[in-house]
Length: 288
Length: 315
Image 1 (tube, chains in turn blue, purple):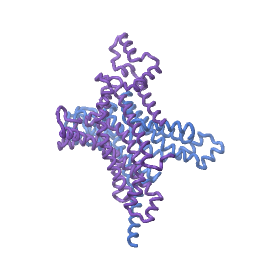
Image 2 (image 1 turned 180 degrees about the vertical axis):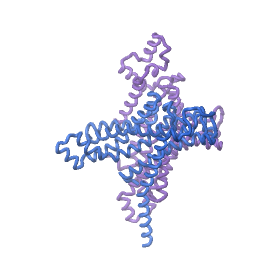
Image 3 (image 1 turned 120 degrees about the vertical axis):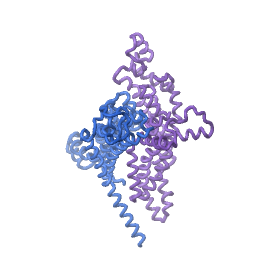
Protein backbone atom coordinates (compact mmCIF):
# COMPACT_ATOMS: atom_id res chain seq x y z
CA UNK A 1 0.00 0.00 0.00
CA UNK A 2 2.79 2.41 0.91
CA UNK A 3 4.57 1.62 -2.34
CA UNK A 4 1.62 2.68 -4.49
CA UNK A 5 1.15 5.78 -2.34
CA UNK A 6 4.73 6.79 -3.06
CA UNK A 7 4.26 6.12 -6.74
CA UNK A 8 1.09 8.22 -6.80
CA UNK A 9 2.92 11.09 -5.20
CA UNK A 10 5.77 10.76 -7.71
CA UNK A 11 3.30 10.86 -10.59
CA UNK A 12 1.52 13.88 -9.15
CA UNK A 13 4.85 15.66 -8.75
CA UNK A 14 5.77 14.82 -12.35
CA UNK A 15 2.47 16.21 -13.63
CA UNK A 16 2.94 19.43 -11.65
CA UNK A 17 6.47 19.84 -12.97
CA UNK A 18 5.25 19.19 -16.49
CA UNK A 19 2.54 21.80 -16.30
CA UNK A 20 4.93 24.39 -14.90
CA UNK A 21 7.65 23.97 -17.53
CA UNK A 22 5.95 25.89 -20.39
CA UNK A 23 5.42 28.90 -18.12
CA UNK A 24 9.01 28.89 -16.88
CA UNK A 25 10.43 28.57 -20.39
CA UNK A 26 7.97 31.13 -21.78
CA UNK A 27 8.94 33.72 -19.16
CA UNK A 28 12.63 33.02 -19.83
CA UNK A 29 11.98 33.58 -23.55
CA UNK A 30 10.17 36.87 -22.89
CA UNK A 31 13.05 38.12 -20.72
CA UNK A 32 15.62 37.28 -23.43
CA UNK A 33 13.58 38.88 -26.22
CA UNK A 34 12.85 41.93 -24.05
CA UNK A 35 16.54 42.46 -23.33
CA UNK A 36 17.37 42.18 -27.05
CA UNK A 37 14.67 44.63 -28.05
CA UNK A 38 15.98 47.15 -25.50
CA UNK A 39 19.52 46.66 -26.83
CA UNK A 40 18.39 47.14 -30.43
CA UNK A 41 16.32 50.25 -29.70
CA UNK A 42 18.95 51.96 -27.55
CA UNK A 43 21.96 50.73 -29.56
CA UNK A 44 23.30 54.25 -30.36
CA UNK A 45 23.36 55.09 -26.63
CA UNK A 46 24.62 51.72 -25.42
CA UNK A 47 27.44 51.29 -27.93
CA UNK A 48 30.66 53.06 -26.89
CA UNK A 49 31.65 53.83 -30.52
CA UNK A 50 30.23 54.12 -34.01
CA UNK A 51 30.61 50.57 -35.40
CA UNK A 52 31.29 51.84 -38.93
CA UNK A 53 34.20 54.08 -37.98
CA UNK A 54 37.87 53.18 -37.67
CA UNK A 55 38.56 54.24 -34.11
CA UNK A 56 41.67 52.22 -33.31
CA UNK A 57 44.35 49.97 -34.74
CA UNK A 58 43.04 46.69 -36.22
CA UNK A 59 43.23 43.34 -34.36
CA UNK A 60 43.50 44.93 -30.90
CA UNK A 61 43.21 42.63 -27.88
CA UNK A 62 40.48 43.41 -25.33
CA UNK A 63 41.24 46.42 -23.15
CA UNK A 64 39.41 48.92 -20.96
CA UNK A 65 38.54 51.12 -23.97
CA UNK A 66 37.63 48.17 -26.20
CA UNK A 67 36.19 45.35 -24.05
CA UNK A 68 36.05 42.96 -27.06
CA UNK A 69 39.00 44.38 -28.99
CA UNK A 70 38.84 45.55 -32.60
CA UNK A 71 38.34 43.75 -35.90
CA UNK A 72 40.47 43.58 -39.05
CA UNK A 73 39.75 47.19 -40.05
CA UNK A 74 39.82 48.75 -36.60
CA UNK A 75 36.10 48.82 -35.77
CA UNK A 76 35.14 48.36 -32.13
CA UNK A 77 33.75 44.80 -31.88
CA UNK A 78 31.49 45.46 -28.87
CA UNK A 79 29.75 48.31 -30.69
CA UNK A 80 29.44 46.16 -33.80
CA UNK A 81 27.74 43.42 -31.82
CA UNK A 82 25.37 45.82 -30.07
CA UNK A 83 24.27 47.23 -33.42
CA UNK A 84 24.05 43.68 -34.82
CA UNK A 85 20.95 43.08 -32.70
CA UNK A 86 19.07 45.50 -34.96
CA UNK A 87 19.62 43.54 -38.18
CA UNK A 88 18.91 40.23 -36.50
CA UNK A 89 15.62 41.35 -34.94
CA UNK A 90 14.47 43.29 -37.97
CA UNK A 91 15.11 40.48 -40.46
CA UNK A 92 13.57 37.97 -38.04
CA UNK A 93 10.41 39.99 -37.43
CA UNK A 94 9.80 41.25 -40.98
CA UNK A 95 10.58 37.92 -42.70
CA UNK A 96 8.28 36.13 -40.25
CA UNK A 97 5.56 38.70 -40.99
CA UNK A 98 5.89 38.02 -44.72
CA UNK A 99 5.76 34.29 -44.05
CA UNK A 100 2.74 34.67 -41.77
CA UNK A 101 0.79 36.77 -44.28
CA UNK A 102 1.34 34.25 -47.09
CA UNK A 103 0.93 31.26 -44.78
CA UNK A 104 -2.33 32.48 -43.24
CA UNK A 105 -3.82 33.43 -46.59
CA UNK A 106 -2.97 30.09 -48.17
CA UNK A 107 -3.90 28.15 -45.02
CA UNK A 108 -7.31 29.83 -44.61
CA UNK A 109 -8.23 29.49 -48.29
CA UNK A 110 -7.03 25.89 -48.49
CA UNK A 111 -8.91 25.01 -45.32
CA UNK A 112 -12.13 26.81 -46.19
CA UNK A 113 -12.33 25.44 -49.74
CA UNK A 114 -10.88 21.97 -49.12
CA UNK A 115 -12.04 20.41 -52.37
CA UNK A 116 -10.27 21.33 -55.56
CA UNK A 117 -8.72 24.71 -54.72
CA UNK A 118 -7.56 23.57 -51.29
CA UNK A 119 -6.00 20.31 -52.41
CA UNK A 120 -4.19 22.04 -55.29
CA UNK A 121 -2.79 24.65 -52.89
CA UNK A 122 -1.64 22.00 -50.45
CA UNK A 123 0.01 20.06 -53.25
CA UNK A 124 2.03 23.22 -53.88
CA UNK A 125 2.86 23.52 -50.19
CA UNK A 126 4.10 19.91 -50.18
CA UNK A 127 6.36 20.61 -53.14
CA UNK A 128 7.89 23.62 -51.37
CA UNK A 129 8.45 21.57 -48.22
CA UNK A 130 10.28 18.87 -50.15
CA UNK A 131 12.69 21.14 -52.07
CA UNK A 132 16.21 21.27 -50.60
CA UNK A 133 15.69 24.21 -48.33
CA UNK A 134 19.14 25.58 -47.57
CA UNK A 135 20.57 25.23 -51.12
CA UNK A 136 17.47 26.91 -52.56
CA UNK A 137 17.82 29.77 -50.07
CA UNK A 138 21.46 30.22 -51.07
CA UNK A 139 20.83 30.00 -54.82
CA UNK A 140 18.01 32.56 -54.62
CA UNK A 141 20.06 34.91 -52.45
CA UNK A 142 23.00 34.61 -54.86
CA UNK A 143 20.84 35.47 -57.88
CA UNK A 144 18.98 38.33 -56.22
CA UNK A 145 22.06 40.08 -54.88
CA UNK A 146 23.07 41.26 -51.45
CA UNK A 147 20.69 43.62 -49.71
CA UNK A 148 18.67 43.63 -46.51
CA UNK A 149 15.40 43.61 -48.45
CA UNK A 150 16.46 40.57 -50.51
CA UNK A 151 17.49 38.68 -47.37
CA UNK A 152 14.08 39.35 -45.86
CA UNK A 153 12.22 38.40 -49.04
CA UNK A 154 14.12 35.17 -49.67
CA UNK A 155 13.65 33.97 -46.09
CA UNK A 156 10.00 35.04 -45.93
CA UNK A 157 9.18 33.37 -49.25
CA UNK A 158 10.69 30.06 -48.19
CA UNK A 159 9.33 29.60 -44.66
CA UNK A 160 5.59 30.17 -45.09
CA UNK A 161 4.74 26.56 -45.98
CA UNK A 162 4.84 25.20 -42.43
CA UNK A 163 2.52 27.91 -40.98
CA UNK A 164 0.18 27.38 -43.95
CA UNK A 165 -0.14 23.69 -43.11
CA UNK A 166 -0.76 24.30 -39.42
CA UNK A 167 -3.40 26.97 -40.05
CA UNK A 168 -5.16 24.92 -42.73
CA UNK A 169 -5.76 22.00 -40.40
CA UNK A 170 -7.24 24.37 -37.82
CA UNK A 171 -9.52 25.99 -40.43
CA UNK A 172 -10.63 22.56 -41.65
CA UNK A 173 -11.96 21.76 -38.18
CA UNK A 174 -13.44 25.24 -37.61
CA UNK A 175 -15.30 24.96 -40.90
CA UNK A 176 -17.69 22.31 -39.61
CA UNK A 177 -18.43 24.00 -36.25
CA UNK A 178 -22.08 24.89 -35.63
CA UNK A 179 -21.68 28.67 -35.66
CA UNK A 180 -19.90 28.56 -39.00
CA UNK A 181 -22.54 26.25 -40.46
CA UNK A 182 -25.25 28.51 -39.01
CA UNK A 183 -23.70 31.63 -40.57
CA UNK A 184 -23.39 29.90 -43.91
CA UNK A 185 -26.87 28.42 -43.88
CA UNK A 186 -28.28 31.89 -43.25
CA UNK A 187 -26.61 33.06 -46.41
CA UNK A 188 -23.58 34.85 -45.05
CA UNK A 189 -21.08 35.48 -47.84
CA UNK A 190 -17.83 33.48 -47.62
CA UNK A 191 -15.75 36.61 -47.10
CA UNK A 192 -17.77 37.62 -44.07
CA UNK A 193 -17.73 34.12 -42.55
CA UNK A 194 -13.98 33.86 -43.03
CA UNK A 195 -13.18 37.27 -41.58
CA UNK A 196 -15.74 37.15 -38.78
CA UNK A 197 -15.63 33.52 -37.65
CA UNK A 198 -12.57 31.79 -39.02
CA UNK A 199 -9.62 34.21 -38.95
CA UNK A 200 -10.07 35.42 -35.34
CA UNK A 201 -10.05 31.82 -34.10
CA UNK A 202 -6.76 31.04 -35.82
CA UNK A 203 -5.09 34.01 -34.12
CA UNK A 204 -3.50 32.08 -31.24
CA UNK A 205 -2.16 29.38 -33.55
CA UNK A 206 -0.91 32.01 -36.00
CA UNK A 207 0.91 33.81 -33.17
CA UNK A 208 2.65 30.55 -32.27
CA UNK A 209 3.70 29.99 -35.89
CA UNK A 210 4.85 33.61 -36.16
CA UNK A 211 7.11 33.41 -33.12
CA UNK A 212 8.50 30.06 -34.30
CA UNK A 213 9.17 31.63 -37.73
CA UNK A 214 11.05 34.56 -36.14
CA UNK A 215 13.29 32.08 -34.34
CA UNK A 216 14.05 30.26 -37.59
CA UNK A 217 14.50 33.44 -39.64
CA UNK A 218 17.12 34.77 -37.19
CA UNK A 219 19.20 31.62 -37.70
CA UNK A 220 18.78 31.80 -41.49
CA UNK A 221 19.82 35.45 -41.65
CA UNK A 222 22.94 34.60 -39.64
CA UNK A 223 23.74 31.69 -41.97
CA UNK A 224 23.30 33.81 -45.12
CA UNK A 225 25.47 36.62 -43.73
CA UNK A 226 28.05 34.08 -42.66
CA UNK A 227 28.24 32.76 -46.22
CA UNK A 228 28.83 36.32 -47.45
CA UNK A 229 25.32 36.68 -48.90
CA UNK A 230 24.04 39.32 -46.48
CA UNK A 231 23.86 43.08 -46.98
CA UNK A 232 27.49 44.24 -47.24
CA UNK A 233 26.72 47.57 -45.54
CA UNK A 234 24.75 46.30 -42.54
CA UNK A 235 26.62 44.99 -39.52
CA UNK A 236 25.00 41.76 -38.43
CA UNK A 237 26.19 39.01 -36.11
CA UNK A 238 26.49 36.70 -39.09
CA UNK A 239 28.70 39.14 -41.01
CA UNK A 240 30.94 39.65 -37.96
CA UNK A 241 31.48 35.89 -38.01
CA UNK A 242 31.99 35.96 -41.78
CA UNK A 243 34.91 38.35 -41.34
CA UNK A 244 36.22 36.35 -38.39
CA UNK A 245 36.25 33.32 -40.70
CA UNK A 246 37.71 35.15 -43.72
CA UNK A 247 40.47 36.77 -41.66
CA UNK A 248 41.19 33.50 -39.84
CA UNK A 249 40.32 34.92 -36.40
CA UNK A 250 39.10 31.53 -35.22
CA UNK A 251 42.63 30.18 -35.74
CA UNK A 252 44.09 32.73 -33.29
CA UNK A 253 43.42 33.61 -29.62
CA UNK A 254 41.03 36.27 -30.96
CA UNK A 255 38.28 33.64 -31.25
CA UNK A 256 37.42 34.17 -27.58
CA UNK A 257 36.29 37.76 -28.12
CA UNK A 258 35.61 37.81 -31.87
CA UNK A 259 33.88 34.44 -32.49
CA UNK A 260 32.23 33.50 -29.18
CA UNK A 261 30.07 36.61 -28.42
CA UNK A 262 28.22 37.02 -31.76
CA UNK A 263 27.47 33.28 -31.96
CA UNK A 264 26.14 33.20 -28.40
CA UNK A 265 23.90 36.16 -29.20
CA UNK A 266 22.53 34.51 -32.37
CA UNK A 267 21.72 31.45 -30.28
CA UNK A 268 20.17 33.53 -27.51
CA UNK A 269 17.99 35.53 -29.93
CA UNK A 270 16.75 32.44 -31.73
CA UNK A 271 16.27 30.61 -28.43
CA UNK A 272 14.29 33.47 -26.89
CA UNK A 273 11.67 33.26 -29.63
CA UNK A 274 11.78 29.44 -29.70
CA UNK A 275 11.00 29.32 -25.97
CA UNK A 276 8.02 31.65 -26.35
CA UNK A 277 6.82 29.55 -29.30
CA UNK A 278 7.20 26.35 -27.28
CA UNK A 279 5.20 27.74 -24.40
CA UNK A 280 2.42 28.96 -26.74
CA UNK A 281 2.28 25.62 -28.60
CA UNK A 282 2.03 23.71 -25.33
CA UNK A 283 -0.89 25.88 -24.30
CA UNK A 284 -2.75 25.20 -27.55
CA UNK A 285 -1.86 21.55 -27.96
CA UNK A 286 -0.23 20.04 -24.86
CA UNK A 287 2.19 17.33 -25.90
CA UNK A 288 4.58 17.58 -22.97
CA UNK B 1 4.58 9.03 -56.77
CA UNK B 2 3.03 11.71 -58.95
CA UNK B 3 4.18 14.23 -56.37
CA UNK B 4 7.83 13.33 -56.92
CA UNK B 5 7.37 14.00 -60.62
CA UNK B 6 5.93 17.43 -59.80
CA UNK B 7 8.91 18.21 -57.56
CA UNK B 8 11.38 17.29 -60.31
CA UNK B 9 9.54 19.47 -62.82
CA UNK B 10 9.42 22.39 -60.37
CA UNK B 11 13.13 22.09 -59.52
CA UNK B 12 14.23 21.87 -63.15
CA UNK B 13 11.92 24.68 -64.25
CA UNK B 14 13.13 26.88 -61.41
CA UNK B 15 16.69 26.20 -62.52
CA UNK B 16 15.83 27.06 -66.10
CA UNK B 17 13.94 30.25 -65.31
CA UNK B 18 16.08 31.81 -62.55
CA UNK B 19 19.01 32.98 -64.72
CA UNK B 20 16.58 34.12 -67.42
CA UNK B 21 14.30 36.13 -65.14
CA UNK B 22 16.91 37.81 -62.97
CA UNK B 23 17.79 41.46 -63.49
CA UNK B 24 20.84 42.00 -65.65
CA UNK B 25 21.88 40.33 -68.86
CA UNK B 26 21.09 36.60 -68.98
CA UNK B 27 24.13 36.13 -71.18
CA UNK B 28 26.40 36.91 -68.26
CA UNK B 29 24.54 34.37 -66.11
CA UNK B 30 24.29 31.60 -68.70
CA UNK B 31 27.48 31.89 -70.77
CA UNK B 32 29.66 33.41 -68.05
CA UNK B 33 31.08 36.20 -70.19
CA UNK B 34 31.57 39.86 -69.50
CA UNK B 35 29.00 41.35 -71.85
CA UNK B 36 30.49 44.85 -71.85
CA UNK B 37 33.76 43.64 -73.35
CA UNK B 38 32.25 42.10 -76.49
CA UNK B 39 31.76 43.45 -79.99
CA UNK B 40 28.20 43.01 -81.36
CA UNK B 41 29.44 40.21 -83.65
CA UNK B 42 31.09 38.24 -80.84
CA UNK B 43 27.97 38.74 -78.81
CA UNK B 44 25.70 37.36 -81.52
CA UNK B 45 28.02 34.40 -81.91
CA UNK B 46 27.83 33.51 -78.21
CA UNK B 47 24.08 34.04 -78.10
CA UNK B 48 23.75 31.53 -80.97
CA UNK B 49 26.19 29.05 -79.38
CA UNK B 50 24.40 28.82 -76.04
CA UNK B 51 21.07 28.82 -77.87
CA UNK B 52 19.64 32.01 -76.37
CA UNK B 53 18.31 33.06 -79.80
CA UNK B 54 15.84 30.16 -79.94
CA UNK B 55 12.27 30.62 -78.67
CA UNK B 56 11.94 30.08 -74.92
CA UNK B 57 10.05 26.79 -75.24
CA UNK B 58 12.80 25.33 -77.46
CA UNK B 59 15.44 26.38 -74.92
CA UNK B 60 13.35 24.75 -72.22
CA UNK B 61 13.07 21.45 -74.12
CA UNK B 62 16.79 21.44 -74.83
CA UNK B 63 17.44 22.03 -71.12
CA UNK B 64 15.43 18.90 -70.26
CA UNK B 65 17.29 16.94 -72.93
CA UNK B 66 20.64 17.97 -71.43
CA UNK B 67 19.57 16.89 -67.96
CA UNK B 68 18.34 13.49 -69.14
CA UNK B 69 21.63 12.83 -70.89
CA UNK B 70 23.50 13.83 -67.73
CA UNK B 71 24.99 16.90 -69.34
CA UNK B 72 25.17 19.76 -66.84
CA UNK B 73 27.54 21.83 -68.96
CA UNK B 74 30.85 23.30 -67.90
CA UNK B 75 32.00 25.34 -64.94
CA UNK B 76 32.62 29.04 -65.65
CA UNK B 77 35.64 29.04 -63.36
CA UNK B 78 37.50 25.83 -64.12
CA UNK B 79 35.95 25.00 -67.53
CA UNK B 80 35.65 21.39 -66.36
CA UNK B 81 32.54 19.25 -66.95
CA UNK B 82 30.29 19.79 -63.93
CA UNK B 83 29.34 16.10 -63.75
CA UNK B 84 32.98 15.21 -63.03
CA UNK B 85 33.20 17.84 -60.30
CA UNK B 86 30.07 16.47 -58.63
CA UNK B 87 31.26 12.83 -58.71
CA UNK B 88 34.52 13.94 -57.14
CA UNK B 89 32.80 15.71 -54.26
CA UNK B 90 29.92 13.33 -53.59
CA UNK B 91 31.82 10.61 -51.62
CA UNK B 92 33.05 13.12 -49.02
CA UNK B 93 29.58 14.49 -48.43
CA UNK B 94 28.16 10.96 -48.20
CA UNK B 95 30.83 10.08 -45.64
CA UNK B 96 30.16 12.92 -43.21
CA UNK B 97 26.36 13.04 -43.61
CA UNK B 98 26.10 9.26 -43.28
CA UNK B 99 28.23 9.09 -40.14
CA UNK B 100 26.60 12.08 -38.48
CA UNK B 101 23.10 10.80 -39.20
CA UNK B 102 24.07 7.48 -37.62
CA UNK B 103 25.33 9.24 -34.48
CA UNK B 104 22.35 11.55 -34.12
CA UNK B 105 19.95 8.67 -34.81
CA UNK B 106 21.40 6.47 -32.06
CA UNK B 107 21.75 9.29 -29.51
CA UNK B 108 18.40 10.88 -30.40
CA UNK B 109 16.42 7.63 -30.26
CA UNK B 110 18.01 6.55 -26.97
CA UNK B 111 17.60 9.89 -25.21
CA UNK B 112 14.09 10.33 -26.63
CA UNK B 113 13.05 6.90 -25.36
CA UNK B 114 14.51 7.52 -21.88
CA UNK B 115 12.84 10.93 -21.79
CA UNK B 116 9.41 9.59 -22.70
CA UNK B 117 9.72 6.63 -20.34
CA UNK B 118 10.59 9.00 -17.45
CA UNK B 119 8.07 11.62 -18.51
CA UNK B 120 7.85 14.63 -16.21
CA UNK B 121 10.96 13.81 -14.17
CA UNK B 122 13.70 16.38 -13.78
CA UNK B 123 15.84 14.36 -16.20
CA UNK B 124 13.15 14.41 -18.89
CA UNK B 125 12.42 18.12 -18.64
CA UNK B 126 16.11 18.99 -18.40
CA UNK B 127 16.86 16.98 -21.53
CA UNK B 128 13.91 18.54 -23.36
CA UNK B 129 15.04 22.08 -22.48
CA UNK B 130 18.58 21.19 -23.52
CA UNK B 131 17.41 19.94 -26.91
CA UNK B 132 15.33 23.09 -27.48
CA UNK B 133 18.51 25.10 -26.81
CA UNK B 134 20.60 23.02 -29.22
CA UNK B 135 18.01 23.65 -31.95
CA UNK B 136 18.89 27.35 -31.73
CA UNK B 137 22.61 26.70 -32.11
CA UNK B 138 23.99 28.16 -35.37
CA UNK B 139 25.81 25.18 -36.91
CA UNK B 140 28.58 27.27 -38.52
CA UNK B 141 29.41 28.89 -35.20
CA UNK B 142 29.52 25.51 -33.47
CA UNK B 143 31.96 24.41 -36.19
CA UNK B 144 34.17 27.46 -35.68
CA UNK B 145 34.27 26.96 -31.90
CA UNK B 146 35.15 23.26 -32.36
CA UNK B 147 38.04 24.23 -34.65
CA UNK B 148 39.25 26.89 -32.21
CA UNK B 149 39.19 24.45 -29.31
CA UNK B 150 40.25 21.10 -30.75
CA UNK B 151 42.46 22.16 -33.64
CA UNK B 152 44.01 25.43 -32.49
CA UNK B 153 43.89 25.56 -28.70
CA UNK B 154 44.66 21.89 -27.99
CA UNK B 155 46.14 20.88 -31.36
CA UNK B 156 44.38 17.51 -31.27
CA UNK B 157 42.78 17.37 -34.71
CA UNK B 158 43.32 18.93 -38.14
CA UNK B 159 41.36 22.14 -38.75
CA UNK B 160 40.53 21.91 -42.45
CA UNK B 161 40.24 19.62 -45.48
CA UNK B 162 39.50 15.90 -45.79
CA UNK B 163 43.09 14.62 -46.03
CA UNK B 164 46.50 16.08 -45.24
CA UNK B 165 47.62 17.74 -48.47
CA UNK B 166 50.57 16.16 -50.30
CA UNK B 167 51.23 13.59 -47.59
CA UNK B 168 51.27 10.29 -49.59
CA UNK B 169 50.07 8.33 -46.58
CA UNK B 170 49.26 4.67 -47.15
CA UNK B 171 47.32 1.90 -45.44
CA UNK B 172 46.10 2.55 -41.90
CA UNK B 173 47.87 5.89 -41.69
CA UNK B 174 45.75 7.05 -44.64
CA UNK B 175 42.55 5.73 -43.06
CA UNK B 176 43.35 7.48 -39.77
CA UNK B 177 44.12 10.66 -41.71
CA UNK B 178 40.63 10.59 -43.25
CA UNK B 179 38.97 9.76 -39.91
CA UNK B 180 40.79 12.50 -38.01
CA UNK B 181 39.71 15.05 -40.62
CA UNK B 182 36.10 13.86 -40.45
CA UNK B 183 35.76 13.89 -36.64
CA UNK B 184 35.06 17.61 -36.15
CA UNK B 185 32.61 18.08 -39.06
CA UNK B 186 30.77 14.89 -38.07
CA UNK B 187 30.61 16.05 -34.43
CA UNK B 188 29.15 19.41 -35.43
CA UNK B 189 26.57 17.84 -37.77
CA UNK B 190 25.64 15.19 -35.18
CA UNK B 191 25.05 17.74 -32.42
CA UNK B 192 22.85 19.89 -34.65
CA UNK B 193 20.98 16.84 -35.98
CA UNK B 194 20.13 15.22 -32.64
CA UNK B 195 17.25 17.43 -31.34
CA UNK B 196 15.03 16.64 -34.35
CA UNK B 197 15.39 12.89 -33.83
CA UNK B 198 14.98 13.25 -30.07
CA UNK B 199 11.73 15.26 -30.38
CA UNK B 200 10.27 12.81 -32.92
CA UNK B 201 11.16 9.82 -30.77
CA UNK B 202 9.87 11.38 -27.56
CA UNK B 203 6.49 12.45 -28.97
CA UNK B 204 6.06 9.26 -30.95
CA UNK B 205 6.76 7.16 -27.87
CA UNK B 206 4.47 9.23 -25.62
CA UNK B 207 1.71 8.60 -28.14
CA UNK B 208 2.35 4.85 -28.09
CA UNK B 209 2.44 4.84 -24.28
CA UNK B 210 -1.09 6.23 -24.25
CA UNK B 211 -2.49 3.45 -26.48
CA UNK B 212 -4.96 0.91 -25.12
CA UNK B 213 -2.81 -2.10 -25.94
CA UNK B 214 -0.08 -0.82 -23.64
CA UNK B 215 -2.60 -0.64 -20.80
CA UNK B 216 -3.77 -4.14 -21.72
CA UNK B 217 -0.19 -5.43 -21.65
CA UNK B 218 0.32 -3.87 -18.22
CA UNK B 219 -3.02 -5.15 -16.97
CA UNK B 220 -2.21 -8.71 -17.91
CA UNK B 221 0.95 -8.41 -15.81
CA UNK B 222 3.70 -7.92 -18.38
CA UNK B 223 6.89 -6.65 -16.78
CA UNK B 224 8.24 -3.15 -17.48
CA UNK B 225 11.00 -4.56 -19.65
CA UNK B 226 8.57 -6.60 -21.73
CA UNK B 227 6.24 -3.62 -22.16
CA UNK B 228 9.13 -1.39 -23.21
CA UNK B 229 10.82 -3.68 -25.71
CA UNK B 230 7.96 -5.96 -26.75
CA UNK B 231 5.23 -3.38 -27.19
CA UNK B 232 6.37 0.24 -27.06
CA UNK B 233 9.65 0.08 -28.98
CA UNK B 234 8.22 -2.03 -31.79
CA UNK B 235 5.35 0.34 -32.41
CA UNK B 236 7.38 3.52 -32.08
CA UNK B 237 10.28 2.69 -34.34
CA UNK B 238 8.44 2.69 -37.70
CA UNK B 239 7.53 6.41 -37.84
CA UNK B 240 10.94 7.32 -36.42
CA UNK B 241 12.76 5.42 -39.17
CA UNK B 242 10.67 7.23 -41.78
CA UNK B 243 11.61 10.57 -40.29
CA UNK B 244 15.26 9.53 -40.27
CA UNK B 245 15.19 8.54 -43.95
CA UNK B 246 13.69 11.90 -44.87
CA UNK B 247 16.23 13.75 -42.73
CA UNK B 248 19.05 12.02 -44.61
CA UNK B 249 17.88 13.76 -47.78
CA UNK B 250 17.80 17.17 -46.12
CA UNK B 251 21.09 16.54 -44.29
CA UNK B 252 22.81 16.82 -47.67
CA UNK B 253 21.75 20.43 -48.04
CA UNK B 254 22.84 21.23 -44.48
CA UNK B 255 26.46 20.47 -45.40
CA UNK B 256 26.76 23.73 -47.36
CA UNK B 257 27.46 25.52 -44.09
CA UNK B 258 29.50 22.93 -42.20
CA UNK B 259 31.72 22.07 -45.16
CA UNK B 260 32.43 25.76 -45.63
CA UNK B 261 33.61 26.14 -42.04
CA UNK B 262 35.90 23.11 -42.27
CA UNK B 263 36.92 23.67 -45.93
CA UNK B 264 35.75 20.09 -46.41
CA UNK B 265 35.85 19.20 -50.14
CA UNK B 266 32.26 17.94 -50.46
CA UNK B 267 29.20 19.04 -52.42
CA UNK B 268 28.25 21.72 -49.91
CA UNK B 269 31.64 23.38 -50.20
CA UNK B 270 31.24 23.19 -53.99
CA UNK B 271 28.03 25.21 -53.68
CA UNK B 272 29.76 27.80 -51.53
CA UNK B 273 32.68 28.10 -53.97
CA UNK B 274 30.23 28.42 -56.85
CA UNK B 275 28.27 31.15 -55.04
CA UNK B 276 31.42 33.05 -54.10
CA UNK B 277 32.75 32.82 -57.68
CA UNK B 278 29.38 33.49 -59.38
CA UNK B 279 29.71 30.07 -61.03
CA UNK B 280 25.98 29.71 -61.75
CA UNK B 281 25.86 26.40 -63.70
CA UNK B 282 27.71 24.60 -60.88
CA UNK B 283 25.33 26.11 -58.33
CA UNK B 284 22.33 24.92 -60.35
CA UNK B 285 23.66 21.40 -60.93
CA UNK B 286 24.34 21.00 -57.20
CA UNK B 287 20.81 22.19 -56.46
CA UNK B 288 19.43 19.41 -58.70
CA UNK B 289 21.63 16.84 -56.94
CA UNK B 290 20.31 17.98 -53.55
CA UNK B 291 16.73 17.71 -54.84
CA UNK B 292 17.43 14.21 -56.15
CA UNK B 293 18.87 13.22 -52.74
CA UNK B 294 15.69 14.27 -50.97
CA UNK B 295 13.47 12.47 -53.47
CA UNK B 296 15.49 9.26 -53.19
CA UNK B 297 15.34 9.47 -49.39
CA UNK B 298 11.58 10.01 -49.44
CA UNK B 299 11.11 7.16 -51.88
CA UNK B 300 13.19 4.89 -49.65
CA UNK B 301 11.01 5.86 -46.69
CA UNK B 302 7.85 5.07 -48.67
CA UNK B 303 9.18 1.66 -49.68
CA UNK B 304 10.63 0.87 -46.25
CA UNK B 305 7.57 1.70 -44.19
CA UNK B 306 5.38 -1.29 -45.11
CA UNK B 307 8.30 -3.60 -44.36
CA UNK B 308 8.68 -2.26 -40.82
CA UNK B 309 5.03 -1.67 -40.04
CA UNK B 310 2.80 -4.42 -41.44
CA UNK B 311 -0.34 -2.46 -40.45
CA UNK B 312 0.26 0.01 -43.26
CA UNK B 313 0.29 -2.70 -45.97
CA UNK B 314 -2.69 -2.46 -48.23
CA UNK B 315 -4.03 -5.72 -49.52
